[in-house]
Amino acid sequence: GYIKLSNFMVTKSYPIFRQFQASAARDLLYLQAELVHLESQYQKVAKSDRDTDEGDERHLYAFEWWHLSQSENCGLGGEQWALALEIRRKLREYYASLQQYNQVSSLNRPKDSEVRTLREWIESPHLGGGCGFIGRDLGGFVQPSAYDARCEGDFVSPVESPGEDDFLSQFLSGPFLKLFHKFWYRHKVQSGPGNKSSLYYYSDEHIHATIGVIGTVASSLAPMISIIVLYVIHSVKIRLGLVCVFTFMFSLVLALATKARRIEIFAATAAFASVQVVFVGS
Image (tube, rainbow, N blue to C red; front, side, top):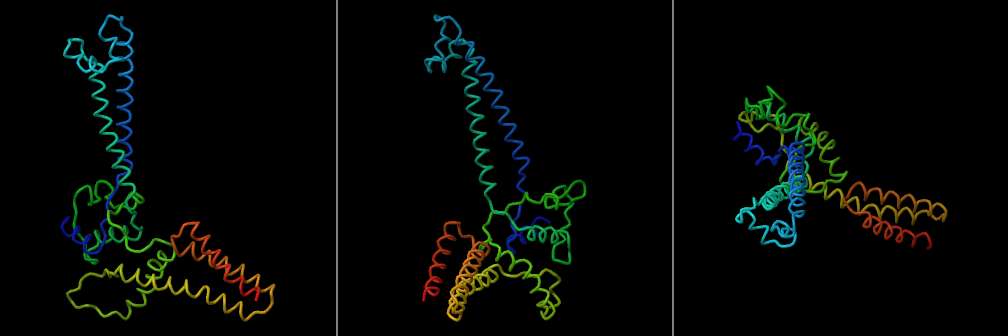
C-alpha cells in the first residue's frame, strides 16, 4: 500500500508527485473571476456614494478613510467598506495561490524514465512493488491513475537531482546505461534466493561521478589533440582549416556536454582559438 510505496520513494530516490497544473490554473482563474466581479461591484457602489450631495457623509468616502471605515456604525450601510474588505481578503488568497503556483512550477522535473519506472514498480510484483491499490488515485480502475502515461509532463520532484542535466549526462545515464546493464546483467551474480525483485538499482552518485570523470578527460583531450595535430602539420592553409574545425568541435562539445551559458562558451572558445593561433603563426 502507501507505506510500501513511500519507502520505495525514499530509499530509491523516486519522490515523484503530480503537479495538477491544470487544476491549479483553473483555481487561479476562478479567483481572478471573483476579484473582477468584486471590483466591478465596488466601482458601482463607490460611484454611487461619490455622486451624492456634498452634505451627505457618503460623499466624503472618496476623500477621507475614517468616515468610510465607520460607515456601518453610523447607520449608512457600509457597503463600500464591506466590499473593500472582501477584496482585501480575496487578494491575499489570490496572491498566495499565485506564489504557491510559481514555487511548485519551479520544482525539478523528473525524467520520463524515472516516472515510467515508478509506474511499472507500482503495478509489477516481480519488480518488488505490486502495491495492490484499489482507489481512484493509484488503482487505475475507474479513471487514469495519478502516474498514468497520459499525465506526462505534469510531474514534479521536491528534491534536486544530483549532477547536471546536459546532453552528455542524459546519454550516459540513459541509452549508455541500458547497454551497460544488458552486458552486466549476463555476468551479474544474484544476491541470493531472498532477492525476489528483478529491479536493478544503480547509485546516482556513482553514475554522476563517472560522468564527471569522462567529461574532465574529454575536456583535457580536446586542446591536447588539436595542439599535436597542428604541430605535426606544416601547411599553413591546412592549419587554418583545422583551427576552424577544432574550434567548431570545441564549442559544440561545450554546448552539448555542459550547462554553460552562451557568454561562457564564447569566452572559452575564444581562448581555445587563441591557443591554436600560436601554432599557426609559428
